[in-house]
Length: 141
Image 1: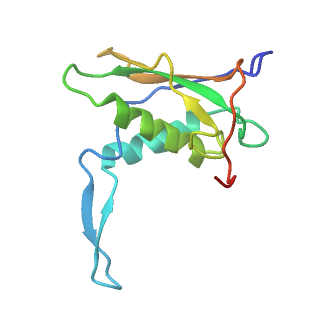
Image 2: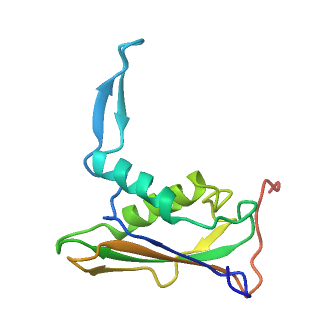
């Protein structure tokens, strides 16, 4: 963490989304189908746990901007929104962010997707907001 509270991580793994190539399984106990993330996403999520260090002592619960720079292993159509959602979920899972709602993740300003065949990765920069930002919380209308 830098002096101004910025966190920087680099996940050295192929970025993957939760939504593409999801798998459908049958729950053996209930017989009901359920959707599970793809093997590629599971591998990405597991690798992320190794690279997201050091973690904050407590998950971030104040407004931040999360800027992600994705470097994909191949060219082609890619849904930046789905990639962003996947990284948000990973940061919550590993205790960096308390939640990924708008009260905490106020923006993804500067997020981009590029190509790097030899070194696919995600560069993450989490910066506290400098300007005032009202959290909504559970306030009544």
